[in-house]
Length: 120
Image 1 (cartoon, rainbow, N blue to C red):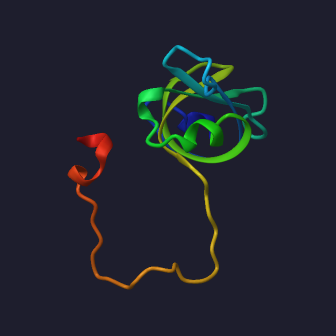
Image 2 (tube, rainbow, N blue to C red):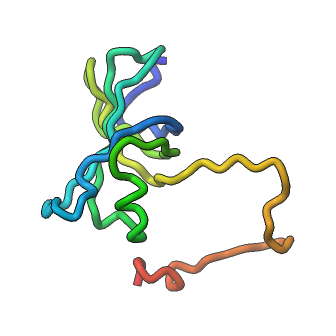
């Protein structure tokens, strides 16, 4: 597994993290999610670092703060013997559902970038 870890490699993490920098008193722009990893990477720390500018709603500040469990899809930015520094593409809650989703069945669904206010 360690031979496959390299800068630029995408990966998925679904587990516990500790969010830092999400309080209103943080005047900086840096945010982080960290966790000490278990086997097979025991002794290493996973650190997701990103900017406040990447948050798309105000709920993120409370949801990502402190001790929490999250689903993260990201890529490895930097790697050494003790730390995996990563950048998230997506952070959220992984929702398992046994039944169908409560949406109408369609052949095609699309959200144009112009419809998302953060992309205006």
